[in-house]
Image (cartoon, rainbow, N blue to C red; front, side):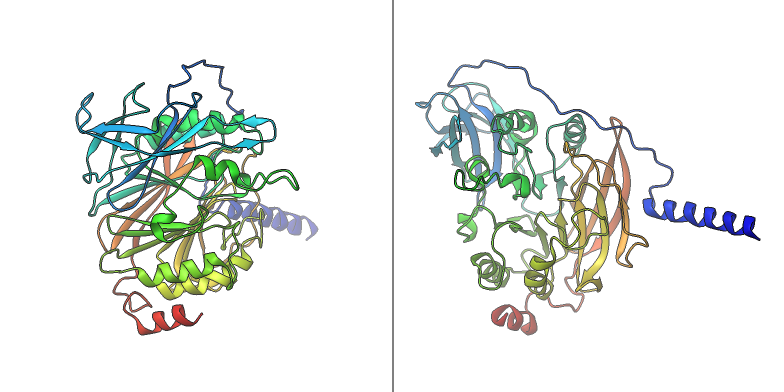
Length: 438
């Protein structure tokens, strides 16, 4: 009898262990990879470095780069043929100091109006290398690459290589970019690392905890992030670079700030209500939201950290009929059913945690057991996601695990938008009542 009980306990332990992987099968994760180190590469002081682009309102792009020459002009020449620039735009510049570090001259120049789904060739500062970018389409289909918590490790490089193989239009990053953590030269090396991708497709980012870099009495928070990664906050009626919105094809995307005030009396809360009320679901039938700290998380890491923000803002997103929510912070992958108020709800959003881009802190392996009823798939592996909006009603989501240096599709699902579902989407008097009075 005692021997039988031991066997049963052993089998139960095995079952619990298998359940902890949730559809991960017998996959054995490759070992961690070291932080990347970039050799010193002297460049002419006027040569553009760390070039990246972002959307900047309707039919416009913002080109950002850094030079060591303080007299270098903030101009971008561009056109649709290599070496032939039919237009020129003048921008602005800034710089910052952080403890003993002084940044180079950071240039931000908006170009446009641009044609949709078109390749442009451009150069920064009146000389140097020629880059090329492709503008997103104005109609479906449109594809997004999604990866958070990138950092600068060998796994980061693997993730970026896999994203580079994806035919995507815009990169979405829900926080934790460089993992500089006050060592400012790591911002420079991160800009160098991502330049090949970030100079050719718009990168739309929001802040994570590793962007804070606040030192009490010495340095304010987000100085480096706000100086280097300027997003279209002013274009979307926001007063802060930590939260903003933009449209791509038929998708309205809202980037919220987990580390900006979000209670009912905050500027972010007021801005979110106003932004949601302006959404026209006939013009943008998909509503996608990104922020850093997950609200639905069955991993043991960072439990409860998003509860206050969820209590404040989830009713607004539910009333507006948000379709998808992407977060990071937890260094693992997880996808939920449509959820609201802590349980499955056909009118809630699908939440996807994708904080597995390659950070130096490693993966979060420990999950709560048994898994919540709303958790569909979870796995602690590095990777990236691809979201293809096929039309106004259907999207295809896939998550690609970094299996050594191969990209392996490990989770996939078709998602139907809430348009026409009977839920509180645009045009609903109930939605407007909640947004106007909450």
